[in-house]
Length: 253
Image 1: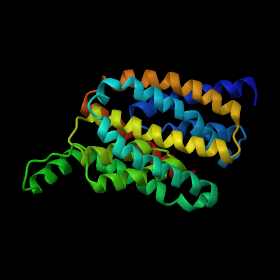
Image 2: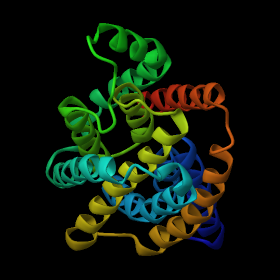
Image 3: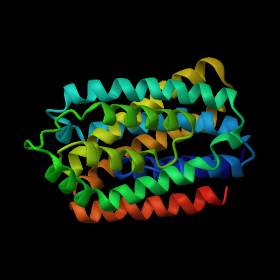
C-alpha cells in the first residue's frame, strides 16, 4: 500500500469508529476500503474486526455515564454476546463467504423495521402484560437474540449495532441513549472476542489493522460525544438511515 492508501485506511477507521459509537455499520466503510487496496476479503474482514475492536471500547468509555446501573444486565447479556462472537468467528473461518450473503441484508432490514416500530411494539407488549412492565435485565428471548447477534458480529458484523438497538429497545425498559450505551458494550465484546480468535488462528494484515485501530479510537470518542447529545427521535432517524444505506451496500456486494 502507498502512503495515500495508509491515509485512506486511517480515515476510514476514524469514520467507522464515529458511526459505530452512534449507531453501528462502520464495517461498511472500512471493509470496502481494505478490499479496494487489494486485501483479500477474508483477510480484510479479519483485519477490520481487529482494528475496530479498540474503537468499540473507546465508544463504551464515552458512554460511561449512560452505563451506570447496567452492570448486572451487561454481565448477563455480555456473556451471550461473547459466546455468539466465538461461534461467528469459527463460522467465518470454516464456511464459504456466500453462506450469509442472502440472510445478512434480511437481518439488517428486520433490525431497521424493529427500530421504526419499537415505540409501538413496546407499548403493545406492555398492554399485553397483566402486571406492570419491569424488564430490567431482559428475559431469555432477549438473551437468545443477543447471542444470535453476537454470532453475526463475529462472522461479519456490518450493521450489528442497528440490530442490537432494535432488540434492546424492545426487550428493555430503557431510554434510547442508555440502550445505545449497552449496544456499544455488547458490540465491543463481540468484536473483541472475534479479534482474539482471529489473532490466534487467522492471517492478519497488521499495518491496516493498526491504522484502523488508531482511527477508530479517535472516532469512537468523537462519536460518543456527538451521539450522547442527539435527541431520541433524531437518534432513531440516524439509526434507520444508516440501516437503509447498509442494506443497499450489502445487496451490491
